[in-house]
Amino acid sequence: MDIEQFRKAGYQAIDRICDYYYSLEERPVVSQVQPGYLREALPESAPEKGEDFQLIADDYQKHIIPGMSPWQHPSFFAYFPTAGTFEGMLGDLYCSSIPTPGFNWSCSPAATELEAVVMDWGAKLFGLDSQFLNSSGIGGGVIQTTASDSALVAVVAARSRYIRQYHTDVKQEDLIMYTTTQTHSLGLKAGLVLGLTCRALEVKIEDQFALREAVLRSAIEEDKKRGKHPFIIIATIGTTSSGAIDRLDEIGEVVKDYPSLWIHVDAAWAGVTLACPEFREVAMLDSINQYADSFCTNFHKWGLVNFDASAMWVRNRKDLTDALDITPEFLRSKHGDAGTVIDYRNWHLGLGRRFRSLKVWFVLRSYGAEGFRNYIRAGIDLNNYFATLVRGSSNFSLVTEPSFALTVFRIVPPSVTDPIASQTLLNSLNQSFHARISARHDIWLTQTMINGIFCIRFAVGAARTTKAHIDKAWKLINEEAEVVLANLGQ
Ligand code: PLP
Image (tube, rainbow, N blue to C red):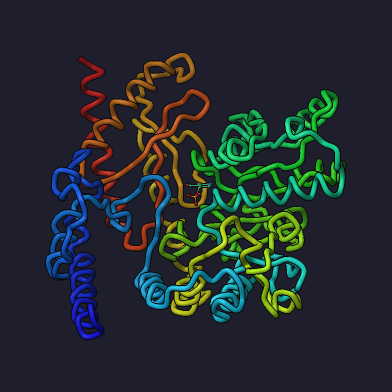
C-alpha cells in the first residue's frame, strides 16, 4: 500500500467506524456468533499472493465486526465498562502511525516525556501525594498494559525490596503475599507466575467484604510464628465482585508495626472516582497517600481511554529500578547512563512498550478535569438511580450496598422470608434468571458468587448510557424475573 492508497483506505475506515457507532444501539450487545465461526470463514493459510486492501477491509466488516461484542453499547452493564472514546481511538491511530518500541528516552524522547507528564497530570487529577509525581524525582507514574501487570510489577518490586533491605537470606518458599477472597485473580496470578504463596484472607459480609485490621494482624502474627515472611498486601479499592473497599486506614496501622510489608492498592476500576473530591474519602485517598507503596487504576476501564492504559504510581521509583534494571551494553545510552532521564524499560516487565500516553493525553485534554469528573459522576448517578429501583421492588434485593457505579442484586421474592435458609432455592432461581438474561442480545449483565450467594452485577459506565437505557434495562430485568417467578409458582 502506498501513501495515497493509505489515505483512501484510511478515509474509508473512519467512515465505516462512524457508521458503526451510529448503528451501535441496533446491534446486539453480545456477539451472536458461535465458537469456531471464524475458522470456518477464513482460509487455512495466509494467501500466497498479496490481496487488494478493499477485499480485506470488506472482510473485516463481514467477518470480524459480527464477532465483536460492542462494550461501548449503552446497554452494556457487564464486567466493568471499557469506556473508549474517539479521542482515545485517534491516540492509538497516531501511536501506530509512528511505531516505536519506546523502551528508553532516546528511542523516541516524546514517548518517555509525554508519559512522565500525563502520569503527573493523572496523579494530580486523582489527588495523589506529590511524592508519586514523576517531577518529584522520587516516586513516579508509569503506564502498564493491565492492572494485572501493575500488580505483578508491584510484587516483583516488593519482593526485591524485602530481600535487599530486610532478609537477604530468605527462602523463596517462605515468602507470603496477602490478598483477600475478594481480590481480583491478579493476586493469585502474580503468585503463580512468581512461584510465591498467596494467602487470600477471609472477609466478612458484615464488613461489606472489606479487609479489616484484626484479620490482617492475626494472619501476619500466625505466619511469622511459622517462620514465614509476609512481604506484600494487595488491597483493593472497589473489588470486582461487589465494589468492596478494603480498610486501607486499618491496613496502614497494621503495617506501621511491620514496615517491611509493601502495600499495593489495586483500584483498577474505582480509582478514577478519586478525580471527584466528594468520593475521595470513601475511596480512601488519605490512606493511599499515607500508606501505599504503589497504586494502580485503569484509565482503560472507567477512565475514558481505549484499552490498554493501566496507570501505576510508586512512592519510590528506585524500588522498581532496583528490581528490574538489567542493562547490557547494547541498551546503554548517554542520558540513561547520566541518570538524567527516565528509562521506562526499568519500570515494567518487557523491554519495548507502546506509546500509550498519547491517547491519555488526548482524552485528558479533550475532556478536561471537569469533563472527566462529570462523566464519573454521571455513571454514579445512573447507578444510584438503578439501586433505587431495586430497593423499591418487592422481587429484588441488594446483596451489598451499591458501590460507586456498581449494584449487586438478586431476586428474593416476597414468599421467601428467610433468605439464609432458602439459599439453595435462591441460588437456583437467580441462576435461571441470569441464564434468561444472558440469552438476550439487548442487554448484558454478568454474575458473581459472593460467600455462596449467586448474584447479578449491574455495572454502569459505558459512555453512551443514559437514564433511558437504565429504564429499559429495568423493564427487561423485570420481564425475565416474572417468567422465572411464574415457573417457581408452578
Ligand atoms: N482489579 C480489579 C478490581 C478489577 O475489577 C479488574 C478487572 O475487572 C482487574 C483488576 C483486572 O484488570 P486488568 O484486566 O487490567 O488486569
